[in-house]
Length: 418
Image (cartoon, rainbow, N blue to C red; front, side, top):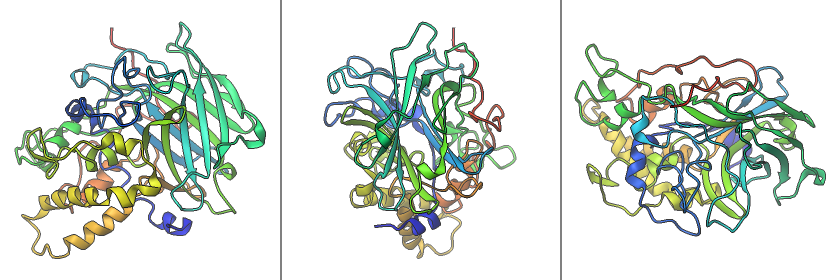
């Protein structure tokens, strides 16, 4: 068990190695077997959710989550969950894909049970949810808007005082921001600019020391020219601003946050820290999971991870995290005089990465490593750690458009592709 205090101290070493390394790596995982009743994915750690008849596109595929103190009310916490991200690698650099609504059901998954989008909150440090804030949507209208409901559930899945906390609607595709407010909760749902910024292509070519490809040379004169892979892309965002007292227990401001998408009792996807599944769970893009190129050496387990729970992450996945970190640390072997301490560093780092929960002190306005705010450059903060200093930056220091400082904290969406 991890105490709430130690969870606050661990406040994430690695909140984000590579949230969204997914877009290109995604295609390699399309054929993975699906346990239980659904074909699942994390933020393109496989290519979103499989198309019909097995899924609904990527409406339940999580891309990123964020948690931070409200910038306008220190007694409130902002929670953000994004889905409907880049689903086709061929569209990179061409502009956002067509507008997509939030999912209401998945064919062949749990009958006609509704899709729910869930923020899971651990308030006592045991890696299990003590509170769940659940969002569900109705059928999309012609303008893309949907009825929405927000409910606060306890650890047993019961509603607070037996009532729905908020009823409202999402913002239509061509509408200005619609803000819903009720019982102290503020809610937005709709299309936004994808807030993640990262040179995915440079990371995927991290090993070859080719100045035209690798992040190893992006900061050097004449080296790799960095590009934000997600510039100009959109996501569907759920943004909540809630009283922090709904999330904390006995006045302790340290909480853990992760998100899941569910169809009835079936968990489709989950995410805490960006790219844990993508980078560390087989098959990932690096040895020992891939001997060379796209040749896999381990059975795919990403769907199994997505269907799992943080409380069992350490027991089930620590070995996989250690394997990948061991390879990433070798990127520094050429310049490191003594590698004898690598094993200890790797073990400590794995202990921060798992369980896959984003930790945040809601009483503090600080950003990463305290929770995660949209403008936080999580990649630069983490690349040096997971490569033991071999890569210090991806040379993409900010989003392609500025973030607003007020609710819903994410920039307006880009015009869709024709």
